[in-house]
Amino acid sequence: MSELGGFEKPVIIVGGGAAGLSAALRLAESGVKVTLLEAGRFFGGRARSFKHSPTGMELDWGPHLFMAANPALRSLLERVGAADDIFFSPSLEVSYRIRESESTRRTQLSFPEGGGVFAQLQGLLKWHGPRFLEKINLLRGLSKIVSKSGDKNPDESMSDMLENLGQKDEAVRWFWEPFARAVLNLPLELGSAELFKAVIREAFADGPKGAALGVPMKALGTLWANRAAQRIRRLGGEVRLQQPAVGFEVNDSKITGVMVRERETLPAAAVISAVPPDALGRLLGSELGQQSLFSNLGKLRPGPIASAYCWLEEPDEGPPFEAIVGEEWDWLFRPETGVEGAENLVCLLAGAEDSIASEKRSIIESSARDCLNRMVPRNRIRDILVVRERAATWANGVAEQNYRLDTRTPIEGFFLAGDWTRTGLPATVEGAVRSGENAAQAVLDYTEASV
Ligand SMILES: Cc1cc2nc3c(=O)[nH]c(=O)nc-3n(C[C@H](O)[C@H](O)[C@H](O)COP(=O)(O)OP(=O)(O)OC[C@H]3O[C@@H](n4cnc5c(N)ncnc54)[C@H](O)[C@@H]3O)c2cc1C
Image (cartoon, rainbow, N blue to C red; front, side, top):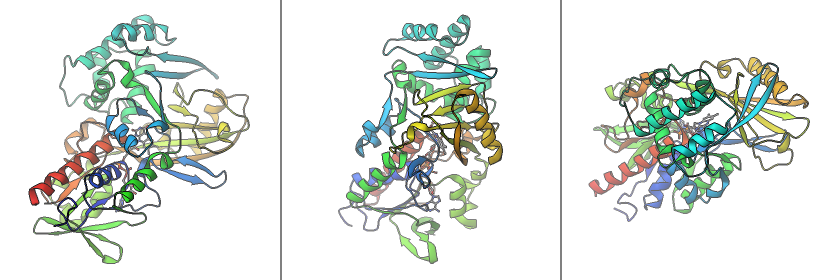
């Protein structure tokens, strides 16, 4: 046994997204020898960025928002020196663009910093949003969720939940629906209320400041993913890009290695799979995949997100992000790319299977043009780049909660991570980072037990 966590062979982590990088980092910080294998050309998985050659800008594979009450993600950012690169408003503040016929109007929801229900009421009353009685009802609904009254119904969908809470019309359209779609990336009738409530509870546990939304001040690759990979390297770990795993080597129900290209097998003391469920299915192959534990992987459904980066003729001023109501798009972002010309760039984002995100590229592009012509009518669109991710999120539906898998598996030394595993949270970066932390802890427990 070496000093490194009791193992001579490395712990292999397959997948360099938020789950894999957080697992590898935690293990490396604990003195365990790690090797991380990432199939793609970039670290960060779905929260990665890429170079847009025509402009030299580093763009995200779709813009991301985070929440102040994302403790695992914030700890990760702190440890890689990126804590100041996400801007969080002091409390929950959302700028809205509401479509009215052929134009849009702006309004802002802003909960005062600190304070309890009365402060929230004050914020809601100042909002030029839903009618007065709906605002009161909204606050009542929010308080019921936070206080857990009338709870525990794992079969409840978001639309059931809103009905049970007596939420209607404008409160649904302006508050619940944009939030639920951002959190679950599913239509209200499919999304799991239990997952949504878990997020609301964490967000509002200590007043509305935990619900403050954070926007990255840099492209995600530079902001966190490359820094996390570098830190793993500095701690003695190995991180490899463009190194896809193609299978696992299992002997007597114990994992012994990971097969990479050309049938080479890398010996492993333990393995963490941190890939999405479809990729895991392929890695397991026919023999392992037949085990009953994995038989429902195919029932976990992906949810799409489309992003339309639009370069305008003139700079467009406004907040870093705005929620959109009444259009085919959910959010407008003004991304930070760190390159000249970024002030002319905006990005529209739409998610969920019933949205424009499921359409053909040409339809998405023309919808983005129509929407922007209403939102920035005096500005000409110079260019549009559509980025589509078919599987932006996984397993946020009511029907899928029973199929999410735990960190530990019956195969000795084999652990699972990924936003789709059973974290109690929806598929988000926070959920993925926590799944990585869980898997790292499971490996550490395994190491101790094996020494
Ligand atoms: C456009 C978009 C917008 C989003 N917005 C938000 C948001 O605002 N807030 C939020 O919290 N979340 C958001 N998400 C979701 C969030 O990005 C994901 O939940 C999270 O990044 C998932 O991390 P993961 O590590 O579980 O999986 P992934 O990021 O998918 O990482 C898995 C990695 O494994 C690699 N891999 C696959 N197969 C192999 C193999 N055989 N060998 C080696 N490597 C392999 C993949 O290349 C990938 O890098 C968004 C996602 C998208 C796409």
